[in-house]
Image (cartoon, rainbow, N blue to C red; front, top):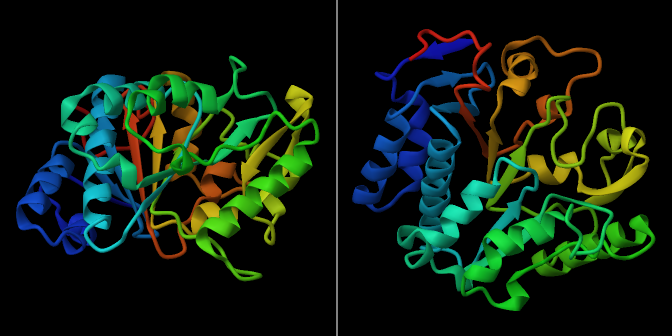
Length: 294
């Protein structure tokens, strides 16, 4: 693994190349220079270390805002896959409350999807949709047709997965065997190394044909509805948001350890053509081997 300090700019050239507006390129470029970077062996991944969850959220918001603006210069819509869990909550609140994001981003051109959902109704307190709707979506001028939620209230989780797969296929006008290419996928990571609802030693990790499946998670005695690895890995950009000391040891294995015979699901996120960015707080980065710790 190659460890890079603040003087390194090579791992950021992909972003500069994407941005046609030089001023926007500089603005985003200096964002990257604010933290430490690790260029992992695949050369497709970067890490930004934030001091705390507030800084993590603001940096993620700035990256997402820049990606939306850049994409909409050449494309009519921006497609974003949202993550559940506790870490992105402050990010969603910031996007909805801060005028720099709320009023400047053309939200009417952004389409929202979910990487996974619990098998509960949309008004349930554990629903990923409910959390994102309450913290962000309901507070922004987003057309209803731009919100593509998983119909997790359906009693048969497998049927809910099939319906969501059809929704995605119809939106992207996919032919048989094709994969969607989302502009941005947000992911989190649990202390057990799971991401989306891809948990260790579950059947969904081996799925290569389906876009969305109902994944049985025995430790919760329930099904979770989740996008599959081929879909997630086909995205233009993937952003992991990870916070908390309880995830530090697992994160060290995911980012700097050797792959095990049964790798953590988060280790199986390997973009085919896109880029991977980890935005983590210093507590989660505690066990990483860095050139320097601030």
